[in-house]
Structure formats: structure tokens, C-alpha cells
Image 1 (spheres, rainbow, N blue to C red):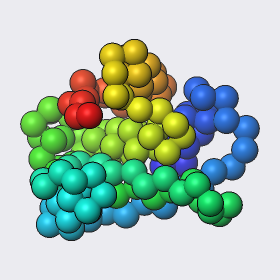
Image 2 (spheres, rainbow, N blue to C red):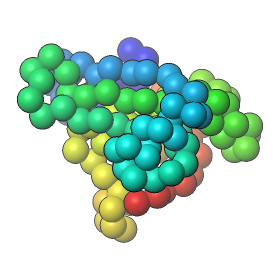
Image 3 (spheres, rainbow, N blue to C red):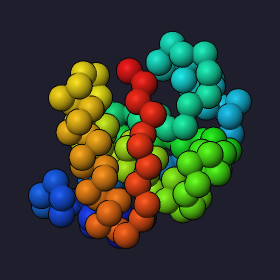
Length: 130
């Protein structure tokens, strides 16, 4: 995780320390979170929750480890690479990046690819949902 933080900070030229909480949840909990906060009634792999008024943390990330394991198998990548990719994806959202349109998607895709490659981890195409 420290290597991911350092690589992300270097790529984005972040000079200050930022804190992000990370939770690993099961599919049932992720489905509940996704329904409550995104109005989508299914389990997703990663969700980000941005804090605007908290000087201690910029937000939290929830990762569904069951889906991460399945996706690692489906995409023939390691579980570690999949977890790092999901953590990176959630972190980029907390840092203001999104994928609501084609230019945003291309930018976020490029950042994810560059950071994963800098960590010498396999990068798979991300399934984008808007």
C-alpha cells in the first residue's frame, strides 16, 4: 500500500500527506452500500466516499474482497494486482478524478495504467460504469 501511495503521489505531484480509510466488505454489505449511496441495487467492486469537511481524512474506500478475488480470476491477474487496482481507482476518485465522459475516462485510464506499470503490476482494462 505504501508503494501505491508513493507512486500515486509521484505521478500526480502530490506533496502533502493525505489520509484515506480502507474497508474490506462482503458482497451483501457492498450491495447495501451501493444501494444506499449510489442507488444501484448490486454489489460492486469498489466505492469511494469523499469527505469535504474532515481535515483528518479525504475519504474512505470500500472494497469487496469477494469480487476482487473473482475479478482476479476472470482477468487472469493476481489478487494483489486486483486489490491494488481497486484501491488506486478509489483513491483517484477521492483525489477528484472521475469517468463520467470519454475524456475523463481516458485520463483516469491512463493514470491507472501508468501507476500500475510503475509498480510493475499487471494492468487490466477497467470495466467502467457511470
